[in-house]
Amino acid sequence: MEFNPTRAVVHNEGCDLHYWYQGKGPLITFVPGGNGHGRQFNNMIATLSDRYTCATFDRRQMSASKVEVNKKLSIPQQARDIRAVIKAVGFEKSIVFGSSSGAIFSYHLAHDFPEMVDHLIAHEAPTINILPDASEVFEWFLHLMEVYETQGLDQAAGEFGAKLLGYDDDGVPKTVPPEPENLRNFWDNEFPVLLGYTPNLWRLRQKNTSIGVMRAVRSRDAWFARAVEEQAKILACTKLLVPGHHQGFEVETKEFLPYFLYMLEILEDKRRGV
Image 1: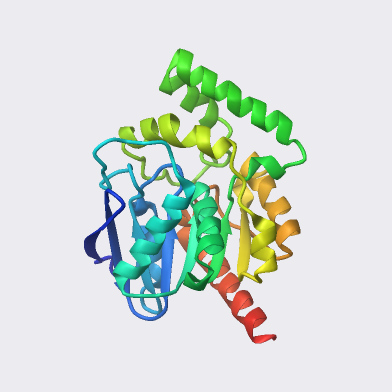
Image 2: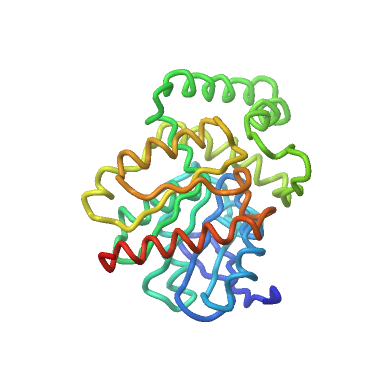
């Protein structure tokens, strides 16, 4: 379908959250990661809106969703923001697709508000603290924080971006870049908090949360791709190797979409005991 969403704003806890949606049927809420903006999901929304109501938003302190004074990331608050968007669209429950740290926020939504999550698809959530080489990755992240503080954003973002594998593969379209202030907010307020946070995956398993995880083929052995393997072990859930890189859903949507729909089919079959 043509991308022609309804755009609106919902005020939640001091922030005007800008969100948009289109389509008909069950709700899918797409949750952005560290780049903060929802427009990376516009291709997915246009493609799926003939059978689903699809919604996304700019996260708090990112793109259009401004606050008076930026603050350190609160992951529980991010979960409450997702809840506010779901309710604003007119639903009490949603399929949730979270990418990167958006998948971490989605895990927390399922933990705090399990009644609101129909199915959760986590695409390369960077849960570094459950990796076999967690110590090395953690200390590299500390190094990046020091680089940011002493040498500035460009140097830190450059070192970080060099580990985002697959973006420079031949023939892969470029992603939509985030606003410069999104990057500054990520490094000032989000990166330090995410470094020390791990979702309570064991509790989600105990609650029988309907979860599937995705690892992107172009991400190869990046830390956020390898983290998917550990999540799948803890959650005892379905794992799919999917086309594209860390944002493959945005730039290789046609290739990615069948895997997304297949994951939903698997989760529905599990629920029905098929």
